[in-house]
Length: 201
Image 1 (cartoon, rainbow, N blue to C red):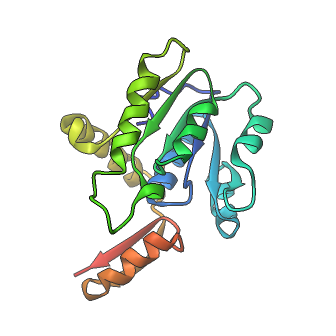
Image 2: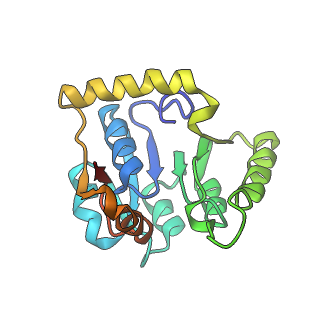
């Protein structure tokens, strides 16, 4: 998402939604390794984690995120990594600067256990399709692993190498036995966890 799609360059600024989460912590660290400035949304309790990675935290619960981003990056950001979907993705698109890229990779804000699992994706795909053809010097795409399995394998191998040499740090909130898998899912859904929740056999 960071290098193949958004093609970030040193000195650019990106916004990572959920910067203290499992994917967000990796995205943030990878961006900082590239000397990319990161603005990361997180709850106030997780701001120290975001700062420790070299990013600027934004409290999505108490702050107006678009207004805060506009102050920190008056010309807009070069990329937004959005796992929220739903109406929030419109704000993500509008925070992009000229030549910016929106990478959507989920619909966490729009998920509802009572509806069909694909329903939240329909309006998202529609918006992305529309934004992709507008002549506005910005682009949007939806990322999912199965779309580029070979590339994902290559990228994952590079991430493992960065972990092995200490360039990246794994943020593990806690480890739970398999029989507590429902509690692990609750922690992720509630936003209480920082980084990953590991399930052990």
